[in-house]
Length: 330
Image (cartoon, rainbow, N blue to C red):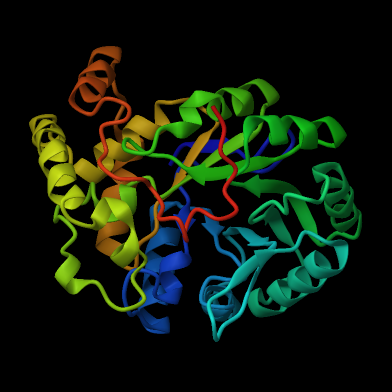
């Protein structure tokens, strides 16, 4: 698989990574065995970047990855995150980017993953009242201690990225980005390119909306993130499925699957863009990876964007409860 770089001085990784939120049951029940099979498939497919976080299942995702790595060391570059505090009983969450909290959470992540350092450590959500420059100084100390390689920020604005990058080079920014979530096009993708920062695109398949089989709310479990997500609630869901149907037809006309074409579109946004689809299925992952082999022409990109113009989606990408902590801009 083609390679892309995690920042100007970071390691090269596969152009498509694997998002590991699903290992914690975000989109339905799963098992350690199923997750290990997906990790084995990722390795066989040439994927070298795994993306997780301390709060994915309150440590479940990291623990599952760690148990796989004990028997299969090496190969993968690891990215994890911290900065969100969550009450497991009430579900209440808040943000803490203090040195003390980030240090303790990083140490706990390293134990669960079974490693002595991670290649990329993100601030999961920015604590609005704490200067981002102070947070960068904390992250630089983690680098000096050998606990992390590069550092990054998730769901921040271009302005915040520039403030952080002025203190020390940011390796990566992670935000939701796909054909139906285009806000990063309003400055963040461009700022990352200018500053030579990797843009890691999570939910590149729109939480399953671009899969061959349309998501069925009747199958959503109690913990499924989409149960309360505006784009998957009627009447928005039916409207979105109708809008996406011509795109799926176009993919098949090109001899591709909708998922692989959606990934190919993202890869064409720039050599610094790294999609990280999340799945519990080895076959679905194989479908995603096929996107790296598709080289879209300018005419094909124009056709895709005519079928699915920016802003076509019905409903906000997050509910009011889900959007807390995300920096908005423009």
